[in-house]
Image (cartoon, rainbow, N blue to C red; front, side, top):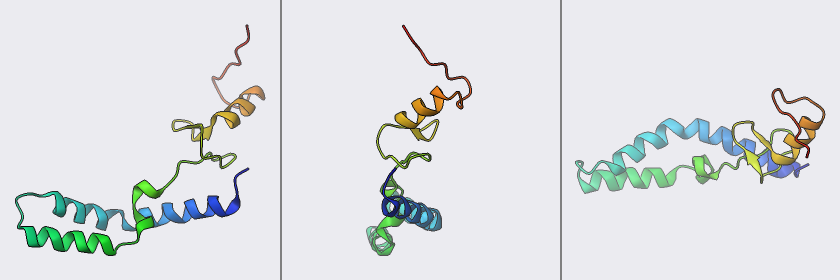
Length: 101
């Protein structure tokens, strides 16, 4: 199990991303628009820099919803490889068959 502090920090970041997503997208669109004057784009970049860093989507870490493990994460299942194997052995993942040879 992951540290509770790491898990809660990641959840807090996810909330911040959702809160600032629209504003961040608008400002990024302005900064990337080459047809606008340089001063306007620069002002948009300064406003973007004033937003909290943890509000950026890249700061969120994919974590297993079962164990909180940050590595070996399957996006489609939202769990780590270890949690997937454990649940698969108990037959709790539909369609997953344990292989043996």
